[in-house]
Length: 157
Image (cartoon, rainbow, N blue to C red; front, top):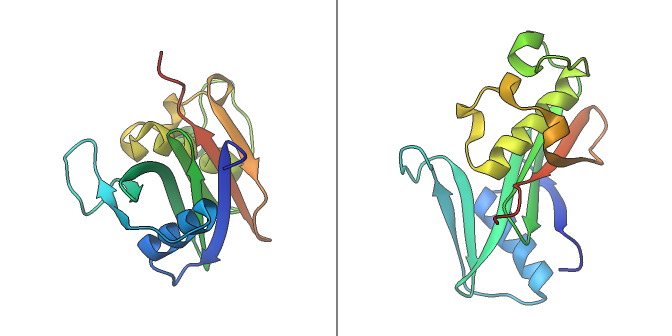
């Protein structure tokens, strides 16, 4: 990979594992033995939680999100999270915004959900407790009518 993250958009009808495997194979420049799944850090379930992937036995950091007809996958060199949302959502601002934040709710939701995915917690943590000015994220180009963001967990020291 030549950058910190590679993004691919797919039709939402595509199986997530198939989309991730194809994305990683393309980045590696070859097909490899791919194993993937999900793992919940809270309960240990493999039916939900953070996606994981190994390409020829090597751990590859991945994330994915779906909204409407879209599936977005990201592959990175470190823990990563991605989210895509419709551009207009109807949700109470107190559920999303931290003190002092006054931004577009859909865009803020996408940014914060990406952050929580990068940490591996998902929505177990309240979005209102996430302060975007303390996190590493960036907006992604998204299809018309949608917003998307990618976030990175802080480096381990």
